[in-house]
Amino acid sequence: MFKFLKRLRRDKPIETPEVIEEVLVAEPVVEIAPEPVVEEVKVEAPKPEVQKVEKPKPVEKPAVAVQEVELPKRSLGDGVRSLFSFAIELDDLEDILIRADFGVDAALEISDELKREANRAGASSDAELRLLLKDLLTKKLTRSDAALNLSDGKLPYVILVVGVNGAGKTTTIGKLSRWLRDGDWNVVLGAADTFRAAAVEQLATWASRADAKLVRPEKEGQDPASVAYQTVELALATDADIAIIDTAGRLQNKKDLMDELGKIRRAVEKQASIAEVLLVIDSTMGQNALAQAKAFAEVADVTGIVMTKLDGTAKGGILYSLQEQLDLPVKLVGVGEGINDFAFFSPEEFAKGLVAYKQER
Image (cartoon, rainbow, N blue to C red; front, side, top):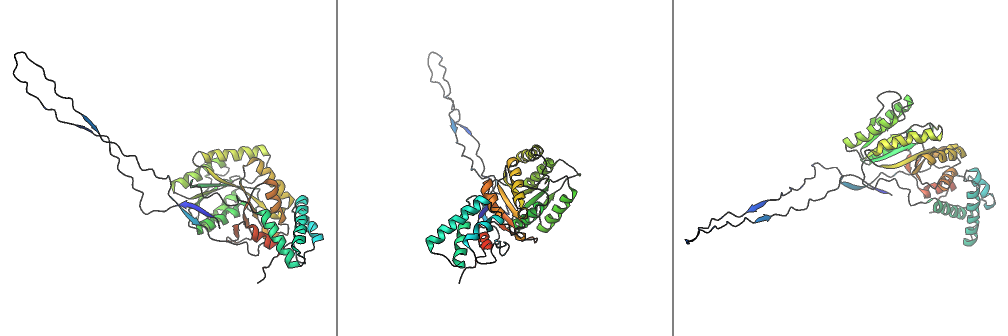
């Protein structure tokens, strides 16, 4: 399980040490009476010596005190549809993987590797082949950058969420917010999809369910960048850990999309750095999802993918294709309509679901 850093809550503010100012200490002037002489002699008083008291170096403290935390565990459970309702046949595997949207090249590669591994291990039974395929898919899907970037201590963590309308973008924000709130994180949401009043109201509903603060447009059609700016501003003012910003879901021409997202990014970065840009993809869209993902990835500086509706398709291989072709990690998955139907992507759990592997006791 991934571990993250969030703000350390304190009852009392951290006290800063007193700074000792530089002090000049002068010895008293002593007047020396001149001895009687024939000629008048002028005697100068000694100059006072200045004693310097060194100023101690100030004690440096972090801008934000943080603590390591672990978010509540959530499992994919039975949320992944299996590719096999029957015994695995090596000769049919390539066709099955292609129909499940793994892509032709990936299907051929996986099929050939499984055949070689089966020959090496002498595996022939259905249970043995399912285990080998599960391990092979787990290995190919595992990446070192799958965790959300919530560990560098640069609070608040700002997450931009992009994707077309209908992909489950707003629902994803609500589920993620609830998950973070369950881990005692303070969350602020920004309704920067200002061109659809329904999107703002939908996010307001999720914010209420997730117990998160919401920044909504002051008027319909307000500049999305200004809403994003106000969201980060509120997050800073309330010492929030996370600011999640919903962006417009219109897949217009790439220049307009790039200009709009660029303006939002610049508005955010005036106050805080951007931790993640998550692209939400509807897994039921198949190859259309891949085309959408490529369009957004070209202009939005995407750092990770969220796959939604994974429980509603037998074409889960699109997840594999996205990760391979875009070289982006799948970080989160949605497997239902409930607020808790949400989890970090687990390659092993996903592979188990695809091959319907049941571990023998």
